[in-house]
Image (cartoon, rainbow, N blue to C red; front, side):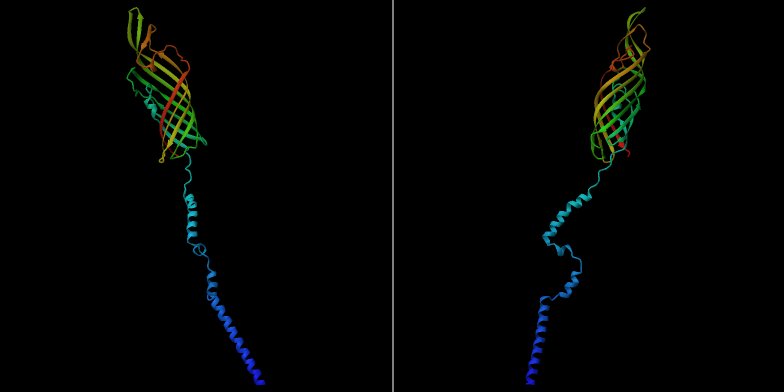
Length: 272
């Protein structure tokens, strides 16, 4: 009897050991990399683990515009000070001048322009004959740009321009004489000292190139007034002609205010 009980007890212990071994084998089979998986899970996840191939392609495409936006350059600041040459002033048919100008910022879009230069006897027309041409031309303007001026682009502007011109010159003209010697025609050289002033409202365009060179032109309408003094003409002489409307002798010292057309072209360089 005791031997039977021992046999039953041994059989139960053996069955328990077999069941435990079998359960452990099933657990290992179900998770053969449990230890390695714990080590791998401690490593940071990568894009390859988180996204399939198609998702990675979409992710790259979606981020491309952001990189392009990051590479865009900021707008260049507007010019603050420019030097210019009044190019068209040299082609003035009556009194050419070599003008040097400057433009400086006052407020955003608002600039001050000032230019001046001496006159030269470099005229397009040979008549009338003039000598000892002296004088100067002065221009000053307040200019407002319709958009902020930038290096590498253009900007339109409106301005109010004041012009002052002083001329001192000897001119030849044909006169009719009537004196004791009779009536006859004579060419005389007379002297003129003249001051001319005008105010005009202009529209224009300025182009600043990438290397800071600039080109600009403006045109508009205004009013003009001049005051002239003549000498060297005998009292019995009456003026006939001298071949140039801009130099005609006029004994009256003042001229009425008249409409005037303003056109100019400037070349320059942006210093800063």
